[in-house]
Length: 227
Image (cartoon, rainbow, N blue to C red; front, side, top):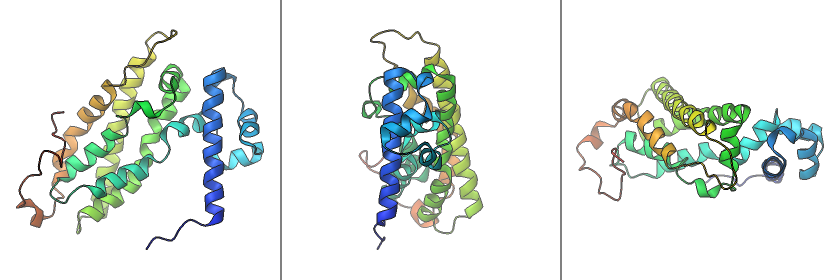
C-alpha cells in the first residue's frame, strides 16, 4: 500500500500550487511581461527566496499552472488500460488526452502562452517531464521489456509530442490577438496524434507474446488510430 504524503510534502505541494495559481492569475491580469517574481511570491504569501526553491523563472511558474501533474496523468492512464489494448494505443491515447481538454484551463491561458515566445518555448519543453515516468509505465505494462528500450521509446514519444506542440504554437502564435479571439484547440490533439502514430509499431513490438493471441479490444476499450 502506498504511504500517504507526509505533512511536509503536503505543505510543499500546497505552496507550489499557490505559486502556480498566483503566477497564472497575475499574468492573465497584467500580461506575462509585467509580472515579477516578487509579485508572484507576495500574492502566494511567501518570500521570493521560497519562490526560487520551486521555480527558476516566472515563465516556468505560469506554464506549470497549465501543465501540472501531466506525468502522473499519463502513467495512470497507460496503466489503467486493459491488457488487450496495445501499448501503442495506450500510450498515444494517454498523451493525446493531455491536450484534449482545453476547457479545464482559465479563459485566455493558452492564447497568452501562444502569444509569448518565452512561454511557448517553456510550454513545449514541459512534455519532456513525462519521459522517465512513461518509461517506468512501459516496463510495468510489458514485463521483460528492456529498460533501455523503454527509455528510448519514452524519449521518442516526448520528442514527437514536442514537435507537434511547436508546430501548433507557431501557427497559433502567428494569429492576431483581439478581444474575444479564441485559439482553436481542436487541432492540437490531432497534431499530437499524427506525430505519435509512426511510433505505434515500435511500442506494439514490446507487447508480451501471451497477449498477442488475445482478441482485439472492443470499440469502447480503445480509440482507433484513425481518429
